[in-house]
Every structure is written in structure tokens, then in C-alpha cells.
Image (cartoon, rainbow, N blue to C red):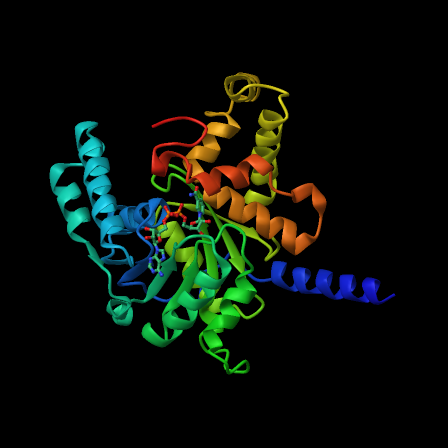
Length: 319
Ligand code: NAD
């Protein structure tokens, strides 16, 4: 009986979230400066597309100068490639690059209108960043997360900094879940927490569109839509590899040539990041309690070995 009541309440919450208005951006606020926290593969991609397509100045924050240096080098390479392929002019590339200001200081986010967090998929790290963002960013700024699987409601709750009834920052928290690689993939999942206000939704949807992306709506449920579907597929491919159902190339080739996807699941795991895949599977497993989401043993071992995929030069493939 208690289970049925809890389930009914959950369904009501999901229905209320789904009833929010995603189609009109009447209450959208202007975004004149974007902040991005985390200059890894997603953060850099988001900063670059915002600077190029939305043409906003971007403050890119990372706690590692080495990550910033690596990312800015990569940004230069991507822009050079765009110029070489005549997709943009040299002046456009220069202007986009000049719009990105990189820093290791979170306090530099004190003048942004919208911030997107893209630090690793570790729940405690995300919540500590959001409690800091609530104190550092202006009181009107939208606080968005690029989380792949962690509850937006939980992340938003961290902004109250111990005052659970103070929803002023929590109402400005939302997820804008960009896909990898950001310059290429058009889809962005928009996920609202229980606390998210309509004007936050309007501003986020309008800004994502300004970046040339196509927003889709997902409920705040473990893994949302994209990773609820994608990660068990990747995890199953890894289980097939470790139990000898097929070799690496057979697994990737049959999916590539048999379902017309651009790359097989093991190569895709390398591109996403093996640590990110494990973190998402753990969230799915822990939050649903469903054993069908248990991470493959090999996935855990690869993270222990530091074989995190393309970003570290070794995963299922070598780079
Ligand atoms: P990444 O490991 O490439 O980058 C993370 C960056 O965050 C690093 O540069 C790191 O130095 C920085 N960082 C760590 N702690 C920090 C702190 N306290 N303050 C500031 N910077 C800090 O990770 P990623 O692949 O870019 O993933 C980032 C987020 O995007 C994760 O939540 C992930 O789940 C999500 N995501 C990833 C993908 C993907 O395919 N990789 C796709 C969609 C969403």
C-alpha cells in the first residue's frame, strides 16, 4: 500500500514536471555573458559553440591550468580546421577565440548571466560546485549542469547552503545536457528539478536554441532519456567482451555495419570517457536498485587502471 502511494506521488511529480511549458520562451532573460565550469571535452565544446554560434563572451573556469592549456590548444585546432574547410573565415575564428576568457578562479563568474557546469560526474563534486555557484554568481544567473545522470533536484538543493526553504538559487537550476562532441551533436536534453522556475526553463531553452541546438525535454529520472537508453547498451557490449561472446572488433563492427551507427559501442565508450560511463552506470544502478544496471566488472577495472579512453590515450583502443 505504502509502495503504491509512493509510486502514485512519484508519477504525479513526473506529470507535473512534464506539464511545464517548453514551447514558448516568453519569460526568457537576456544572456550577455556565459560561464562554463570545467574545461574538459564537454566544457570546452560548450564554450566554443557559445562563442561561435551564440557569439557571447565566455568565462571558462577549471581548477587545473594543465586542463585549460590542453583545451585552448584543442580549440585553436578545431577553429583552424573550420577555416581550412571554409566553414568560417579567419576573422570569425579569431573573434570566437577572443570571446573565451580562461581562468582558474571561480570568483571570475561574478558577472555571468548563465553558467553551465561540466566537471566530472561525481555527485559530491557537483553539489559542492553548485553551493559555491549560488554564492559567487549574480542573483539572476541561471545555474545549469551538464550532468549525464545525477538528479537535478538534488543538485539544486545544494544551492540553498543549509537553508532548505531559500529557493532563490534553486529555482534557477536546470540541466542543459549537451551531447558529445558538442560542435557536432545537435540535441540537448533539458531537465528540470522540482524547484526549477518557468523563467529558468524559458531562458535555458532560448539560449540552447541560440547556440544552434535542438532541445528535448526529459524528466528528472536517473540517466534521463539519452543515457538511460545508451549506457546499458554500452555496458552490455563490455559484458559481451569480458565474457567472450565476441572480440572488440567483432562487437564494434556488427553494430556499426548492422545498425548503421557511426561507431561501435566500445569505441563510443572511449570517446565518452570510461570513467564517465562507469559513473553513469553507478547512478543508474544505485538510484533504481535494479540489478540490470550493474556496471560490467571490466568497466571498473579499466577505471582502476587509468584507461579512461581517448582522453588518456588508452581505452578499448589506443590513441
Ligand atoms: P572531463 O574529464 O573531460 O572534464 C572535466 C573537467 O573538469 C576537467 O578539465 C577537470 O580539470 C575539471 N574539474 C574537475 N574538478 C573541478 C573543479 N572543482 N572546478 C573546476 N573544474 C574542475 O569530463 P567531460 O567528459 O567533459 O564531462 C563533464 C560532464 O559532462 C560530466 O558530468 C559528464 O557526465 C557530462 N557529459 C559527458 C559526455 C561525454 O561524452 N564525455 C556527454 C554528455 C555529458
